[in-house]
Image (tube, rainbow, N blue to C red; front, side, top):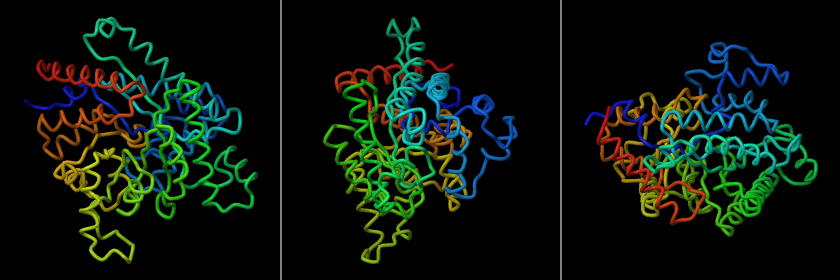
Amino acid sequence: MKITRELIRRLPKTDLHVHLGGSVRLETLIDLAVADGIELPSYTVQGLKETVFKETYRDLEEYLKCFVYPGAVMQKADNLARIAYELAIDNQNEGVRYLEARFAPQRYAGGEMDIHQVLDAVNEGLSRAKKEFNSRESIAAGSEPPFDYGIIACAMRYFTHDSSCYYRNLYSVHSHSTPDRIVGLASFELAGAVVKARRERGVPVVAIDIAGREKGYPPIHHSEAYALAQRNYINKTVHAGEAYGPESIFQAVTELGADRIGHATSLFSAELISDPSVIDKQRYVDDLAGFIADRRVTIEVCLSSNMQTAPELHRIEDHPFRKMMEKRLSCTICTDNRTVSHTTVTDEIYKAVKAFNLSSAQLKNLVAYGFKRSFYPHTYEQKRSYVKQCMDYFEKIIAAPV
């Protein structure tokens, strides 16, 4: 069977690693900026693609600068709800049946909204899109799976007092603490807010994450937050191994107990190990990969964004995803940032199929891992039923390709 882009588009899929701020429609960004009086370098889609949202970036630092403009228009509840709603619609339109949207609530809190109002706004937009999609007759009849979603709350590895109103207030209250301690306090507060939002407010916040600049900002600063999440059955994912070596991934799984890892592109890069106490670097990465594989820690693979932020990757075929597959690691294909990386889930999976010559069985496993290793917000029994429904629908599409 030939795996075409159109076939992939029709298949039920997931996106477990997609940033809300990196996936704002450019037309919406312009619309909201004009309405709120926010200055942009251009007020046309093409102009923004030329000046900010480029096809290529120098490194992760330049890539992250794209988030300044979406962040500026995400300070109001109505704007957040609209952006979340449109993200869900864009995913539904390409066959994504389960979505985990992630963002940093503290970047948008402290002004007009507190953290819970931020979470509520995003949930309102996603919920509205879910209700509209699931009102279809085919969904009600059970002939195809419904759409569902979870929310992942990101703590930032690094921020300054002027990164947001929330962070400014935090620095003011803890003026005698070190920046590292303040970062840890922020993530601990976020974890507490996530627990309350999930348990008391019914918001499907399914996990916490840490994101942002990786080098120089180790996961250990967030250990208290992750311990709090663990005690309250909140799932854990960590951006690691994107802009730093295997040690970052090691810390994520051993010190934070990560259930999933975002990116992990340096997993097999023994030459990037900086710890002088590590004598056998190759054994270090082999043992780390084996540990991850044995415990089914799932890697959220983002091919396009990695190609844009990792200068050492000259061809997509050089991406460590090939070795991840050879090592039988649990992987799922994700977009990271639909707008910043000019991509969709369909595009990402199709790139993987072409570049790594994936078979139908490998494609099925990738899709299945996305559903199975999701942080589905309902009961385990409901999750098993949902995964089966989605994979049965997968088989139905495969059996009758257009």
